[in-house]
Each structure stands twice: as C-alpha cells, then as structure tokens.
Picture 1 (cartoon, rainbow, N blue to C red):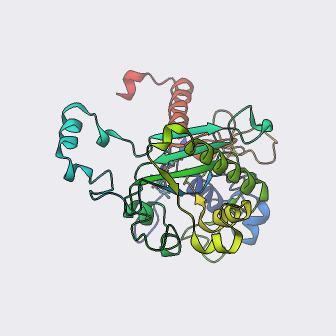
Picture 2 (cartoon, rainbow, N blue to C red; picture 1 turned 90 degrees about the horizontal axis):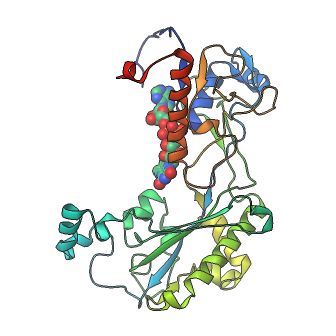
Length: 338
Ligand SMILES: Cc1cc2nc3c(=O)[nH]c(=O)nc-3n(C[C@H](O)[C@H](O)[C@H](O)COP(=O)(O)OP(=O)(O)OC[C@H]3O[C@@H](n4cnc5c(N)ncnc54)[C@H](O)[C@@H]3O)c2cc1C
C-alpha cells in the first residue's frame, strides 16, 4: 500500500500493534532498525535495537502430494472436480443450498491423520496427512499446488491421459516439526522497497526426508486396508524416477520428495515469543517487542515453536489473546469496543 509520493508520519497515542504476518512483520522491524545489529549494519540500516532473533527461526510445514487413482484407468465420465460435480448431479446443488449437506459441503480436505514417526515424538504428533478429493481439479494442482508439467506429465501410466485428473484422491503427507529452519532478512539490493530475502531449504535435512518417507509408508498401509479395497486405489508413480531409483524404494521416495515437495504456506516463528535474554526471543509473553516501548507483534510470527497442525486458527487465537491483553492493560470495556 502507501502513497506513490511523499512520506506521512502517523503518531500513536497508546501503542502500535504490528500484524503483517511471518514474512512482513520481521521485514518491517528490520527496515526500522530493529534486528541483528551486524545484518542491519551491513545493509546500511541504522541500528535502533540490537535484537538478534528478528527474522530468525522461520518454521513451516514441508508437504508432498501423492495421487491415488480410484477405479480403472481413465476415470469416470462425469466432471471429476467436486466444484463442478453439481453440473452432472444438480440435486447436489439443491441439497447444499437447502440443507447445507451432500458432496458440495466438503471442505475439500475430508480425510486426515495425525501421528508420530517414532517414539521420540509421542509428546506431540510430527506427521499429518491431508486427504483431498479434489484430485480431478486441474487448477487445484496448477494454481494452488504450483505443480507444472514436469510433475503432471510424470504421473501415471503412459497410455492413461487422464491419470492425474481422473477420479481419485490426493493425499499429502506433511511434516509438522521439521528440523530445518530458515530466515527472513533484508535484501541488500533493495533494502527500503521490495520483498525481503526468505531462506528456507525444505528437505535439506535427511531426517526430515526420512520422516516424510515414514509418513508415506503409513499412508500406504492405510490405503491397503480392506475398507479401501472397494474403491480400487492405485498409487500413481513418477515414471522417470521409478526407472532410475526403483519403484517404491526409499530412494525413489527421497528423490520424489526433493523434486516435487513444497511447504504448505505455514510460515511462523520469525518474531518468536520468549524470555528476555533468550537469543532468539523477540517479544515477551504480552507480545511486547524487547527494547522498544509501545510496540507489539500479534500474528503467526510470534509462535515460539510451530504448532502441530494448520496455522490459521492458532493465528486467530493469537489475535484474540492480543485483544484480551489490550483490554485488560488499557481498561477497555467490551461495550466501548462497540
Ligand atoms: C495459499 C494459502 C493457503 C492456506 N491454507 C490454510 C488452511 O487451509 N488452513 C490453515 O489453517 N491455514 C492455511 N494457511 C495459513 C494461514 O492463512 C496463515 O497461517 C494465517 O493467515 C497467518 O495469519 P497472520 O495474521 O500471521 O498473517 P496474514 O494472514 O498473512 O496477515 C497479514 C496481513 O498483513 C498485511 N500486510 C503485510 N505487510 C503489510 C504492510 N506493509 N502494510 C499493510 N499491510 C500489510 C497482509 O496483506 C495481510 O493481510 C494458508 C496460507 C496460504 C498463503
């Protein structure tokens, strides 16, 4: 946002609450001279507060998509995408509009699993599976998952032109507590304008890859159960990789993960909450930025450690807590908030 020309100064009578998300909140702090002194100096930014944790400790959830075809090659004749299914079965639209029920009431992610890859993760799960029946939706793969033809051309039998788009399920094993961490920093070539530098090497750590392979094995066990047999699930493999590394070998999956994996848009931890003096702590338990009076951060960036699941609701909960803290500290009644 902002205006094309000129600067405007806005003064807050009480406090400033920064909620620009896990990439932009640390970026704004860094541009304002709040961050690791050495990095600020080398970017030519005047150091106001030396706070080494700003932009560090970036965490996310690495994920890998696998396609199960359900039924024979070629799929079925009606539209495969759940969003277009009502064109063939108008009654679906009626039952959704009338009663909020039926296939159209799906969130698109109807199957889920949380588990531990080994006994050291029993305190909290480190594996999640997202199971989606949106497999037939081309735009879901290309626009949302950003898969290009290097992935889509690889999957399924050569003769099966509908392999990826056929009736089926996309199951996406997800790593909840990756060893890998990244960072958000100033881009020395455009410190004042433009995006920050975001470093996050998903799958750079062998332990993360091994745990995702374990999650794939769990998924294969679930899909092999008698209850699934009626749906005739067939896992589709990437042809070139299968030839090079052997169908279904651990090495095949390691390569598959590195080539086709991504992160599931859950950046957190870049302004993490902690105790004063902790090397990576940026805010205290009331979300006040250490060393800066009248400034708090309230968004996903303050998570001390990434949550064991999707981040939207936890982020909203942080906002709710922020409101409760402000109400208490400033003596604001709910009536006053209108
Ligand atoms: C494609 C996608 C799909 C997702 N799917 C899910 C899901 O299914 N389930 C789930 O739980 N989570 C999902 N997430 C994650 C979830 O959306 C985030 O964890 C959550 O929104 C984080 O909230 P936040 O307040 O920290 O940041 P945000 O929601 O990103 O809010 C930050 C806001 O600050 C604004 N902003 C940034 N910089 C400036 C600036 N300089 N000036 C003014 N405004 C600024 C941004 O425009 C934005 O509106 C998804 C994320 C993405 C990107």
